[in-house]
Length: 152
Image (cartoon, rainbow, N blue to C red; front, side, top):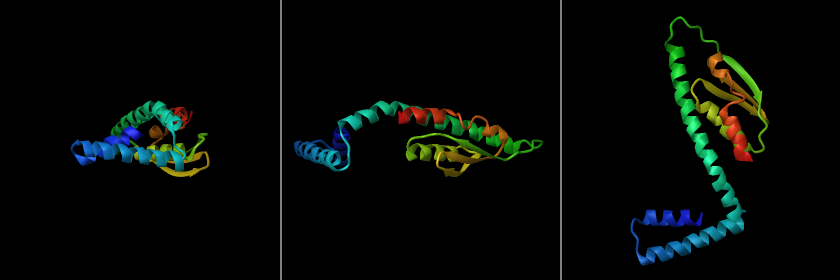
């Protein structure tokens, strides 16, 4: 985190001089000390976040991939004249340890076209799907598996 603070300082200044580097080192060290002291952060927590960053990048990759696939599926549903769209409400439970994982899953579902998270009550999710085909496998999706890995 110290390195991130220092790099941001250098980027925002736009040039590198001795004074800017010295002030950046001092300011970054003071900010890092403050975060460790008062915000329950430290090298161990930072290392844990770095180890999980691969899963987060993988999560973003699958999210973008699913958004693109759902866009085409939704367009196909809307543009096919003879097809009857069958909206459905899906209820499922996912046992996450943190509210952050619930939040990420609910928003990932809502970001995907054709699905909207209607409610989250504890571990129970209620999702409205534009069609039955969009509801298949929602409770055991790659999102759920990756969020469980991120939680540890």
